[in-house]
Image (cartoon, rainbow, N blue to C red; front, side, top):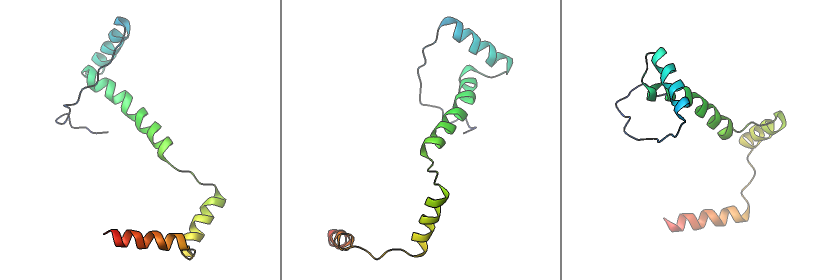
Length: 92
């Protein structure tokens, strides 16, 4: 989580009820934080965890072994792969 406030120039609009805003502002005050810092400190770790969970690929033991096997002993390129490589090389 970035700790510098120097780069905080993008805005996020957030709609809340009067009571929700009061609760957030009171909690921020107890922590001696401004409302923006309080909300970001609470929201960013949750957002980062969600992103990591969705962007991480988890392989089974069998799939992990297969990937390692393919890395150690890659298959010979197919005719289609060789043709694609030629097209790519000729494109440059």
